[in-house]
Image 1: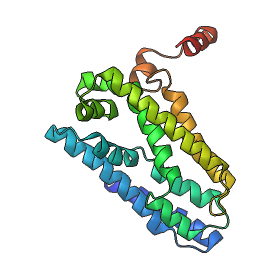
Image 2 (image 1 turned 90 degrees about the vertical axis):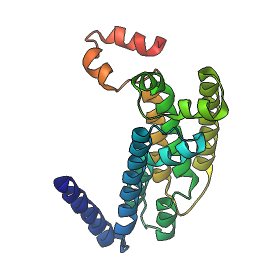
Image 3 (image 1 turned 180 degrees about the vertical axis):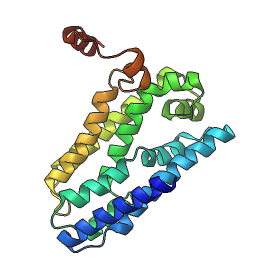
Length: 219
């Protein structure tokens, strides 16, 4: 772990130094907080798994939106995409208080879980959104997936609204980058787990591009 920690420490310092030189703002504490939040969220998932605990849906989502690493990505995006850098806006993002953090994280998490939950449930993996909602609401897997689809749609409505708002603290390119994170997640998981180990090693991309394209289009 020491080499990993050393590399991460150096990365944070390099980003903070470059941002400080260009923008005149000390950003290291915001980057460190984002990394700490990510590590804590993964540790929480590990504790749930090893104790056999199934969290409530609300409890799961609160932690899972952090474990997506979206809040970490958005802090980095904001530092590089905004000039001048608004420190109050950066503080808001690092504390996950802005809707763009919440809804980008939610879309990535729910699209991922909806696509991969069946296989992960069979493997006995950490409970995901579908399983937690089934357990909390006492509903079938079909009803849980319908609810999650509805939440994804509502999150997209909120994201689209953010895209049309004029907020001087957030540059248009930052909003576009953040929205693209959610778009990529939707694209990757719309037909299931298209980037997992199985799809890479046991079901490799065919050399016949036409047949691969048909698979994507037809699902």
